[in-house]
Image (cartoon, rainbow, N blue to C red; front, top):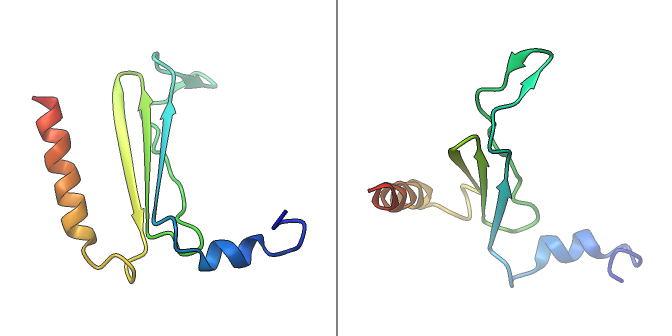
Length: 95
């Protein structure tokens, strides 16, 4: 409905209900190759759109788990702290 009225982007830019996006993608269990060249890693990327502060994207690929963290530095001044806490939690899970 908002898109039909041309108001969707206006709403996304001004909404206050959502501050974090998390996307979890399950990738292939075996390594892939393109034209005979092995794909050694895949880095998932996303964008924090509108006034969403933080976006986490998680991707599993051939036994590896990659997490990207994208944030608006003005809206998330404690980004380094968030990154450090995420690293600590992942290290704890890996034990």
